[in-house]
Length: 293
Image 1: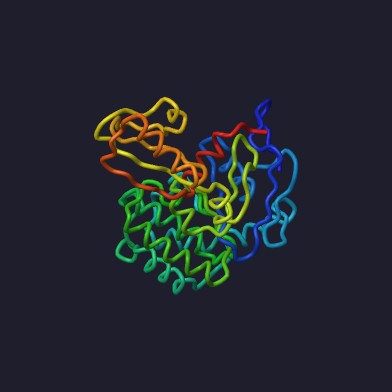
Image 2: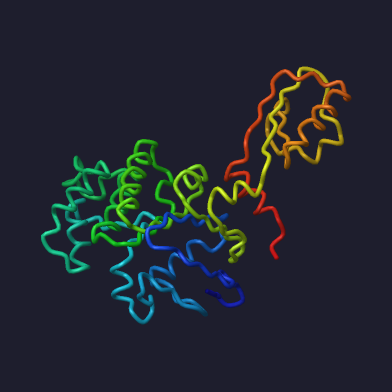
């Protein structure tokens, strides 16, 4: 998949195959091309080269069937200010030719904690409530593929938990979930496989546990009662605002003994020490720091 805007290349040879029923993560920094890719999948943007197939339907040639198979929760809060929540969902049902869809609409309202706001005008809702309605709109026609573009950005913890319970249920029932998020703890917990994008290219693609395992080691967090970090260990130090709290990157477990020996030799007295295992955030930061091929 290639997408160019004049001289700028937003997507540069992205190729992905997401299996039916998979919970798939699409990660990358701002400007990596995630939203462009989602817009192409949704049929909102045409690729410069390549094609997208959703459940066997070409997004270009068979756009009606492709869009029926897809539900997209956009990053932006887009809503019609003239309708209530229930009217919005009924209208969305009508786009897909669905009549008598109130039972499923009621279930969506209940699972997304919107039942009390069903007859409220969209203008009267908070930002978090509007985002819940966007999720309900994407699900109202029961699509087999659900794309969530930063669905929990700026929302409270309660909504995040309720949303993920419901999405997990849908995934267990066979729905394919594609998630983009800057909350890497969410991606680590939810996604079976992850692709990382950087400058429009896929720079990592594997099962979540394999990505984490590929970067063995972790971080050693220290608080020194006396002494200062030896110069030899300075390249390992991770940036931080607290001068007394020192975080050192450790690539292999056997390096720990060498680091402690260097601290003792420098006369450092350790007040606190904590070992933090590598997580998806560590992997993401290190992959993004590597030069793009």
